Image 1 (tube, rainbow, N blue to C red):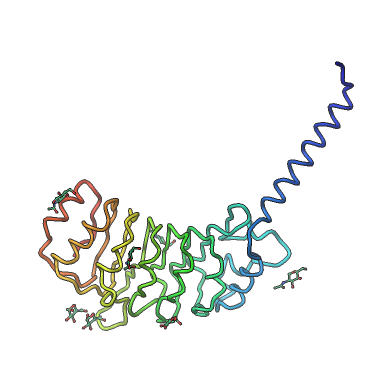
Image 2: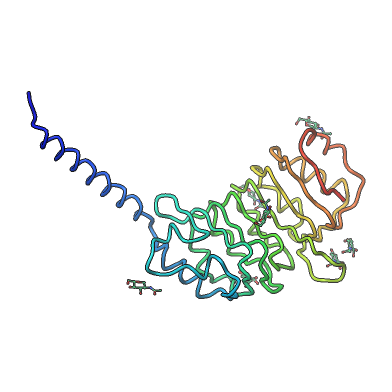
Length: 244
Ligand SMILES: *[C@@H]1O[C@H](CO)[C@@H](O)[C@H](O)[C@H]1NC(C)=O
Ligand SMILES: *[C@@H]1O[C@H](CO)[C@@H](O)[C@H](O)[C@H]1NC(C)=O
Ligand SMILES: *[C@@H]1O[C@H](CO)[C@@H](O)[C@H](O)[C@H]1NC(C)=O
Ligand SMILES: *[C@@H]1O[C@H](CO)[C@@H](O)[C@H](O)[C@H]1NC(C)=O
Ligand SMILES: *[C@@H]1O[C@H](CO)[C@@H](O)[C@H](O)[C@H]1NC(C)=O
Ligand SMILES: *[C@@H]1O[C@H](CO)[C@@H](O)[C@H](O)[C@H]1NC(C)=O
Ligand SMILES: *[C@@H]1O[C@H](CO)[C@@H](O)[C@H](O)[C@H]1NC(C)=O
């Protein structure tokens, strides 16, 4: 059978057209309207537009999957990096952020959320495997809902410029054991500057019994005390820094 060249070209054209239609269909498959959620989030956050490099550029006209700080899987926002965006408020339990249900990777580090508690609605983001709220101005008791994020591989709640007497994040109720109890996928945990107030045996046990995969642990100025329990020896050959 001979097929003239122009027919082949026609078939190839059809193939590309159907391929791009397919790609288009896949990228618009996300069940909720990601773009309007992102725009709602932008409108609710207080940020300094002169120093913002990402939020300030988000605009309705373009493809949200290519906005600064955003990336997608199958049209759903999967990565959101709003670190160092001079955000000074506007995040609460009703934030549109918590309707972006497919986020796996969220970074809000180096902002100033003005001494509010970590909103408990973070538990709606139960695909999170990376959560970075370091140096973001959150204070007070870490909500129990963080312990429901059982896919977390990296959790960073550290604050470095910690001065005694200033408000800090607190792990009392829930305490460290309860927070970590179900976070068995954790590989990296940073709680520098969090007021943990646990004795050696307690926090060492919490870490060694709940976190079999832990490799990086950082707990400077977190008001934990020794003695280092022997259960931590099981964390051997893992990286330990900033203990104490
Ligand atoms: C974005 O653009 C669409 C279509 O032009 C419009 O319907 C929608 O209201 C706009 N949304 C915002 C938040 O401006
Ligand atoms: C979020 O809601 C919980 C109760 O569901 C409340 O205790 C908490 O203060 C709220 N957090 C913020 C930051 O509004
Ligand atoms: C958290 O984000 C900050 C700012 O991007 C970065 O410096 C830090 O390394 C991150 N922490 C982790 C554990 O990735
Ligand atoms: C951990 O998971 C178990 C089983 O789902 C549940 O019963 C328990 O309440 C969870 N613990 C925390 C602290 O969420
Ligand atoms: C740390 O927590 C303890 C109670 O658990 C409290 O007495 C102390 O004032 C807290 N420290 C800071 C700096 O908030
Ligand atoms: C450390 O924890 C102890 C016991 O909970 C508490 O009494 C003390 O005030 C805490 N110290 C600081 C600096 O927070
Ligand atoms: C270390 O882990 C092993 C196996 O999980 C366990 O049998 C042992 O008791 C642990 N050692 C300590 C000191 O906790």
